[in-house]
Length: 478
Image (cartoon, rainbow, N blue to C red; front, side, top):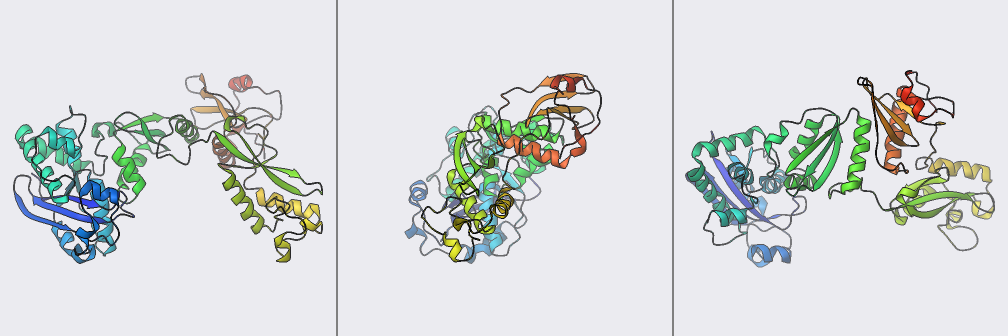
């Protein structure tokens, strides 16, 4: 069918991650799609215990592989088998990630071009809802004696190709495979046509599964390159492999600026809670670290849990964390780094001097031996990185994010978008409560782009006035 033979391969493993799992069985068939040239099959000693759930699925247990060769003993045979051939598997990125990692560990540079029988099935039988090997076998009445065994599953894929050639024609199968080679490293469930519409503009991308549920949301100033980079990393990164395997559709939302993309990404992640967006998921409550003075005048901290949308006065907040454990760990690290007193900070509850005083790691705040002024300066220095600041302007500001777009920002939130070319104004929807992620995004943008800010010293400057304000004169605040 193609200019080179195809090696259809299937493996069984000790787990789903190529980083931690190992191959327990491999089966390979070398073919041109119509005739089998060579076969290879063997159990492999993974050098680690096979989990019980894997044994229940595959039937392969520790006793079966005990006397079988280790991967390094047959690595040359496996590498040579693929020489000058294409690599094909069902959900190819999974099998390839294991084989590539273990071959590279033995010093082999393994870079065959990939073909996927899931993509082939989706291309030739788009009317079918499922393209799992189990359903393909059932749908096409493919004879198999043992599922979830490497060689038998390889034979099933080969059998599917024969049936596809018979039902759809050799040219249709060949053209489908050639299209895969043109669009390499794409998710097996994704329709290639959808990618042609993505260009290198600014915006947000949403990866959805076959039920339309978002599994990952991201942003980029070069959308096409960023989207494709996820898929190209699938064989090297376990998270990217999971994202690639799950993705059946990509939705694109274009924005006029990177700032809008960042804010929109954060908002959508909190709305849909995609399974692979752990960092931007918003907790229902936030752990605040606030400062106060002790009776002796030393600055200390206390922890307060509040609802995430009820954070208001930022002046007393010296840190926002996802848990008490994270907050306490930060206090311990900062105390050690800046020689702060554990007793003053509430880390030690007993009476008398703190433990660090005896080790000369505390200058004596616990014994009133260190002046409050010096200690409090060191406290401020320690927590400066985590401290939140109140909105530094007397009112809303205008950000000139591009030649055609300006944004109105007030109290760390986007409130309006101005389309300069068309002379239109859109109001951002949603509550304007404090959001820690919006704060970080906007604060970082203001620091990096002071010349884009239009403000006024007048506290009477309103949003309505800014919307009508023709001037673009920058007037930044420190």
